[in-house]
Amino acid sequence: MLPATAAGEFGARYSAHPSPEPLPLSALLPTKTGGPEDRADHPQVSHGKPTWAAWAASETVPRPANPADPGLPGIITGLLPVMSRMSIVNISAYKFISLDELPALREQWLARCQALGLKGTILLAPEGINLFLAGTRGQINDFTASLHDDPRFADIVPKESLSEDVPFGRLRVRLKHEIITMHMPAIRPEGGRAPAVDPSTLQRWLDQGHDDDGREVLLLDTRNDYETDLGKFPRAVDYGLASFTCFPAAIAADRQRYAGKTVVSYCTGGIRCEKAALHMGELGMDHVYQLEGGILKYLEQTNAKHWQGKCFVFDERGAVGTDLLPLPRGERRPTQEALC
Image (cartoon, rainbow, N blue to C red; front, side, top):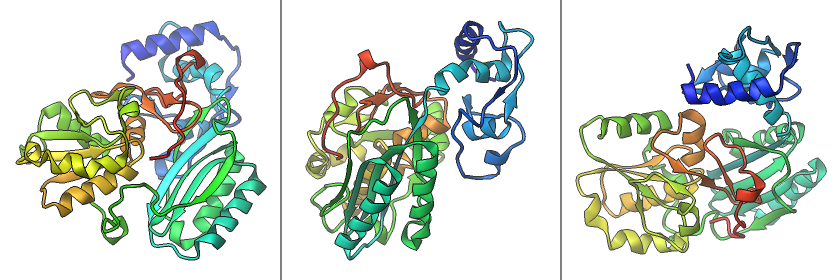
């Protein structure tokens, strides 16, 4: 069941946009490839949030008998006026993997994205790939298929969100020294990932006040100050970083804070907290985890409990809400050029 407040909100949307016939969803909602739940015969709700692909797979949703208590079909119908405007799919993904012949790889992905009409940024470095792209569902599906045709990137699963417009002004495919700048060349996540905690486990730990071994859980925000100003886990350590390159010095000066605790580092999509957790491990710090998939995956897979505010994103949307949808235009902030 959805919380009463959510049901009321969606019920109000439903009542304001009546439709006498069942509505086709596949034409309006994005689909995702994934596990068996994405091919379900009926709509689903996971952690109080809609599973969009399951809705789309069900093709039509009947109208409820009582709009004041719409249940799942009414909730879906109430969202349709919003979702039908969200025709742009935004994806972000990264992978730490050794890459060579970078100039040729740049030309390959530049040509492919230009042919598909995509906009956004792809960063390539000897340590891997980091990308932020936007386009229609068909364009994004074609790009993802091309990405998976390369064995080095076949296991990448992009994170998705929706918007009315493409939030990038152009396409850039850039060569960099690092896909996320830390100025710590010895940190190579490809050599072995830091331990990760999935969003539902983290939420459970925060609910109970400790991890499964009874240790206090301390959250560590590895993002920049202009990002944490918009939203964060309220009790997280926030160093107010001007850039991620400042992180090693901040940790070195504050190591004692983390002694005897379970530390979960987090960032927008996982790339910074992965490097941060590895760096902390190399310093000899114990019980350090990264939040798998970052804030975006936490908002996607949980009911957003313990999160406060909005999530900054590096494009013209400026930020997304806990529903992963863009903010109203009047609430948006100027974007930052840097991707780290």
